[in-house]
Length: 405
Image 1 (cartoon, one colour):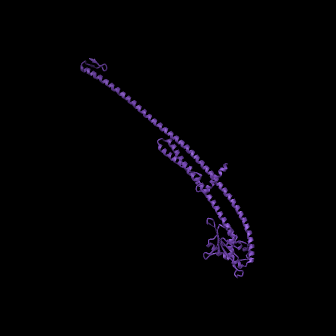
Image 2: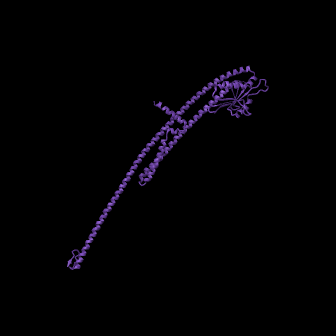
Image 3: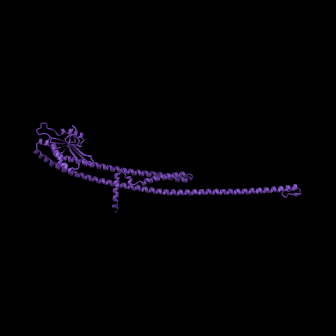
């Protein structure tokens, strides 16, 4: 009998017993081999799993490192962009301050020139007053001449030659000193309502300077019905209006003993607008006074218009500059807001890269618009179409070299 050392079972020495022992041994070895193989496979799978996890983790770490690097680069770009934008803003502010300074200087200079012109106008008025004194003296001389003429001529003779006298005075005492000027003294022959003569004067551009409707009146000494000067004024005023004349003048020998009319030019504007009565000796004087007054009025109107236009130009220049400033400040403020939003978004999340890019592009657009507008902010651009400011800046440019020297 054969006994198994492991289990203690006895087997016969015959073939079945031996076969049974061999099978038992074989089953045990197979079981051990299976167990060993399972253990080896399990260990291999664990190793491969650990390697795969390690590899995946390494890849993730690499991706995270690349993303961090990209974010760091974005942070650097943003910082550089912020620095550049801050520089642009400072430059724009400097340009605006310079423009404000130049504008104030230009305005002050314009005001100074206007004050100087005002002083010159006052001096001119004083000269005009002196001229009036000279004219008064001439008037006295004319009165004496008229009295002498009256003594030599009868009233009838003067009456018949009154219109001719005025025409001759114009041709001899006014025309020679106004050659080349657009002045006429013509008989009024148009329409039923008319006076005797119309004096008209135009400037070089055919703009009316002054126009005077003249009526000449006289009566014989032996006339039973004595006419008055005022009795002719209503009709003369209507004729002046119909012919669209600026003034009406009655050249009269009526009321020969009235010292008011004999003393000089009599203003009747309290009865009818722009109405005067004169003796024949003041015919040239009244024309001289009225045309000088009209010419001075035109000069004053031109001066006032120039001052008004300069004031408008300065105001438009200031408004134009303020529009530029508001536009730049608005776009800079928008750019700052989007820039700050982008920075906050970068801090709070990393998955919103596209949104951050959109905000940054929007920020760049606002900064670009502001920069383009600032680059376009030039004195030439601002003063385009502004005659006053163009002249001021041109004058400043011409004066700069001498100031530097």
